[in-house]
Image 1 (cartoon, rainbow, N blue to C red):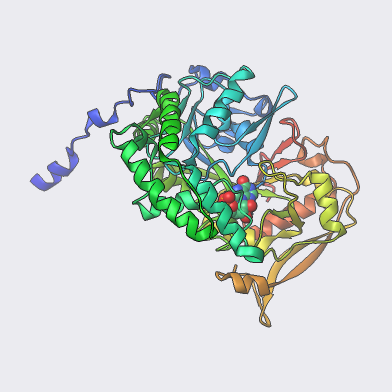
Image 2 (image 1 turned 90 degrees about the horizontal axis):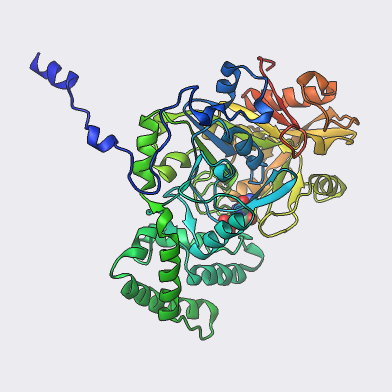
Length: 488
Ligand code: IMP
């Protein structure tokens, strides 16, 4: 009996649930329909019932995760859903990601700042799992402010996020150069070397370290070591001016100070207060460092598994995971890509889909939809529903192919291989479906789509084993079809 009483009366430490008092303070009241945040109905969700909106947006924590090799047009979905959330969180990656949000016909490019920044009651968090170059972040903030976007205390940068230094960028460049034809094809933003130092610990700097009294000494020590390392890698003398680097980063730290805080505490308070949170994944699940096409991956957990470690929000709070896919496949950089079409089909897709990198402008490799890969990443990421993007790009093709399994060493398999060498050897087995000629960019309802487009979508959904909820037929918000009933 006493034991039972002890358990029932386990004290809830109210103190620890207090909102974080600094820049990330939660000012808005708990979510009710009276809350102005929830009256900001996004134009494209207009006309939907509260129940339908809730089903699409999820309550309280929704994750948007790319299921291919990145560039799935996640930005559009995040932008559509932002108005229905209190907080938008970037939780992994860095300025290797990039997306464009079109507002009033004006394109805005974002790299690190979450897309919630365009809707000021919405709080934007750059969480602990991100690696950031403070100069690039400040530039991005400045560019936004110059165009009238409010970046005040609607932004919180985690004091646990890791900091990219000039030596990381140089190391990225030298390692890529040394790898020759085996190069990963990184974005050269120093992402991998920064994450390497994070895991290696001794030479790593978190944002909070920029404000510590020993910061200058630590920069000197790191610069000395890195200089020797870079010289070995390059075979040439390299000089790192530790004092100049310290001075620059000290200034960055001062400029960033107002936005820096404990995002983990802030987000834990937020989930416990039932705030609606939108987690904005960067890159795609096939680039996940643990589960992707290693070593041709990025250095963070870009699949659904990264949300908790990258933000500090336990998985039990994640109520809805939206998997974003393109209606075909693309990849930037090196690595195996079984359904790649290095031919006129690939070029057709590249031209119609404007498949050139947002950050680097590199032409993307293009190919047919790979249901083996996406079924794997949808399961891995715990995806509830799918959003299919860029369907309009496929209009005009006589027929479409979908990879339904791989042939690997004489055996058919629907398992996604763990080793990169197996993936290089995997031969896609295709199913061919009839294409459609119609321009579908004006479709707004499922019924507006040609029967062949409907069949294609149905088949993809069936092969992945997840229902479709959103279909995008163009870059504008209005060019979106929400599936309200169970078609699949
Ligand atoms: P890193 O992230 O710069 O180290 O690059 C590692 C790999 O991930 C390279 O193949 C990049 O092209 C790819 N990558 C990184 N960020 C993105 C992205 O946002 N979209 C697509 N590919 C990306």
